[in-house]
Image (tube, rainbow, N blue to C red):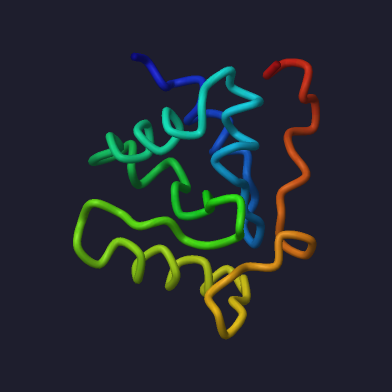
Length: 108
């Protein structure tokens, strides 16, 4: 499956904000699992360009990653962008959630 459209959508998430797998899935016409799979297939230059670290689960938590240390890397990147985690490891989605693209109709 070609995830180019999804990756372009993720590139719109600004620094300091996060989106959920479900939010992206609704906009891209996918399932949340497909979004997770698409992020898992990123590599090389594509992984450096697409801000995969800004995608979290519906509870505002970092999901487990297949590669060792992936969760810690994601948390470090988010903290660098001034995203704050609670003591339980959650991100306040009311505060840090991306409201979506400027023109959501182009994605739906």
